[in-house]
Length: 119
Image 1 (cartoon, rainbow, N blue to C red):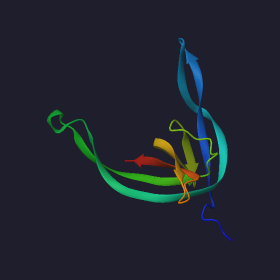
Image 2: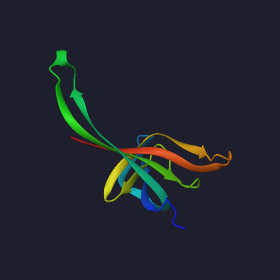
Image 3: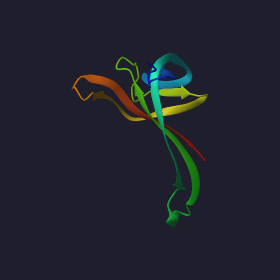
Image 4: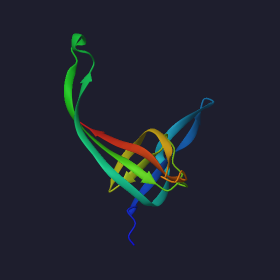
């Protein structure tokens, strides 16, 4: 039997550097973790973003938002502060990583949304 969870993502976890006593996120050399047995379902839409407000002379611009809902195994080491790579593109985790229950009530998988904005 072929599993529907047949896609692989790479989880990117930032490193942290100390700057004047504060921990600063550093994405220049993230820790990379390959995660198999995932399923990504696309959510693609176009949106209009504004730089400023209309009374401040803001300019609207079209942007393409690429997003996926990711279904992954329960033991996937990802948080809302991480990013992923999938098919050569980088996506940021948007919102919470949540566990989901099966129809039997047992924990089945985790679900989270990732997105990439261009434009």
